[in-house]
Image (tube, rainbow, N blue to C red; front, side):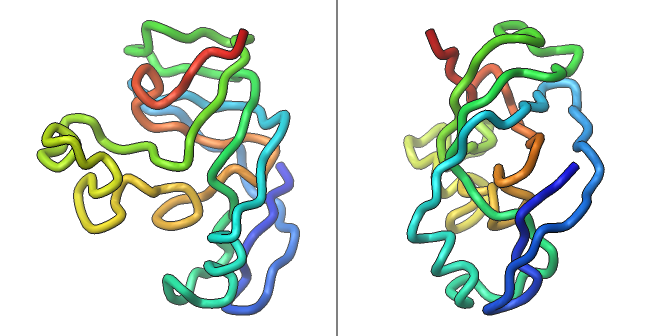
Length: 136
């Protein structure tokens, strides 16, 4: 699949990457629209440090392509939206009402920070039942 990545600080490019795999609680979404945020520009300019070949973007809509065996609320073909923050909801910070701090400072902000983002043909969503919303 094609992905728009940060090659290194100050450099971006298109790169061929494999379609991500879904864990038991996760979903793979085929991107239909993704939004550029100023934080994508800050990321490329080094605000969060060096990232090599990291897919950018963290706000998107799409169509569910695959779901893990434990996903109950979504199925392939569902139209969905995903926000910038996709926490691990069992984490203490998330349970205390601070999902953006899941696991560590800004740990709920996974896309284009600690894992590939949404500027690709497909993207991975952790804890799909909690981190996706159905579009009508």
